[in-house]
Length: 242
Image 1 (cartoon, rainbow, N blue to C red):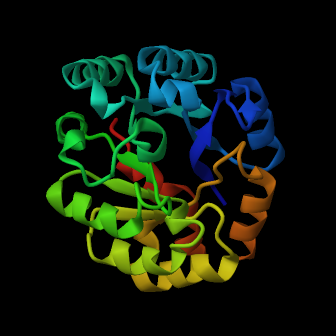
Image 2: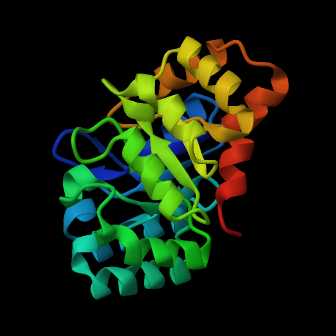
């Protein structure tokens, strides 16, 4: 069974830290083929270029194991657009938006210029959901409808208090993919049943969450072999630009 993790963070953060080398060791220990990585909180909020270069360097050192996503804070306007263009040209393969750290509401038109760049380059967009009032599942629905040609990953699937609206919110926009970090096996199964296995992706949110635990929960979920292949790796890989 292939597993590719849809969201991990590397670097020194305020709450937790994880080096690229240690993440690869954890992937090996838990039978995970590869992982999407983004930079730590300061780089998400302020030092975007430094964070993107940090992620690119890690991916160059572990090209078969790490998949880099860029980040830009939309408040930087034209500079954010230029940095995302640069990062995409350099080889980063997705975009992380983080309204709680970057200081806006997910629905704000402030994000539109950088999402236009994501659409241009075919970059999937990961955003955390479940953070009132800045980033919620139903807000992502409206944003996905505004950008129907951009694929969005619903980070943490509404964790923690908004998980119950996550599946209906994803079902309302065909370009949303539910990322199931923090979810119990029964919730993963329910998401697959309601959305289809091609709309659900595995994620751990390491190091803020336990990669080993998330892998165990996924393996315990009662899914058929084809669903397990899609959720574990194939759907996520299909979203990435070549």
